[in-house]
Length: 379
Image 1 (cartoon, rainbow, N blue to C red):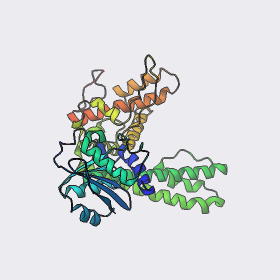
Image 2 (image 1 turned 45 degrees about the vertical axis):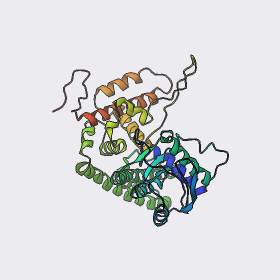
Image 3 (image 1 turned 120 degrees about the horizontal axis):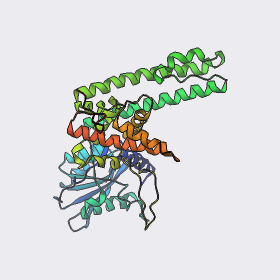
Image 4 (image 1 turned 135 degrees about the vertical axis):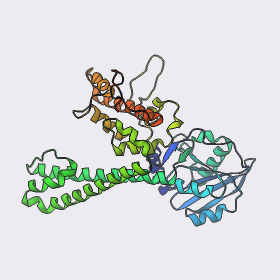
């Protein structure tokens, strides 16, 4: 692949675990078309390979990765099974090809390592390999399904807010570090109020360097507040099921909306406890004979939602967390001590929280914080 394709593949690696993609077991139907088309997509060019029913190469070549060129070239093919790797271009490409009557399979490159392991790797050979894998058994490709365009846009909105929060945090840390070098230690102000308190503590000699950053922080805080208002509007208008998740102390509008959008269809999980492995909150396993080492969590699935659940777990176990079965369970495990016990407990609470939120999302039940202690559900 070209350098652009490599960058796309790296972006897809993050995307598979985060916003626009989700694993869809059973999404592949029985083959309905005699021909299979493999596409190796990069930013500028897309290589294709068309196989016949007997596996013979009927056509191959390349085309520009632009909608008019794709439509013009694929219009010459009869409806067929199209196989491409997940990436930044796969959402719009898959929707475009389906409008032409093709069956589109989006392959998960993490599960289909045959392409990366090839010793004769090229864009042309990758397209042929995808076509042959799709012709033989698409299950080997671990197909993924893109979310509807509207849901993908709403999830992109949450990720945009995350970028603003990260930019504000970086600027605040820079201001604190610059002042610390001058002997000024700032109190731990709330991020939303930092721009209001910081100017009074900035020395005159550092004002030209730091005051513009404080103004940027103020603008970012205003934008973040507006986006949080928009998130509440989305919950009211499009995703009212997210309100049931906010019954749990420590779960706000952003976390509840991200949970609903990331899981998409919660009924595809037969059991609520399957959500933990889906989000990468379960330990890895590498058992060999009598040896079963204790490993870190897999960190598979959606990185953004996993980080939000960990933040909620910190709040539940923190000084502002309200009494609940989940908080009592976590505090009891914290008392065991040992190395890294706090990190393990936070991850365990986040995993249990994911299970709880999925149960509330599917059942619509009223949350009882002290259910195990015989506490009644709130009115």
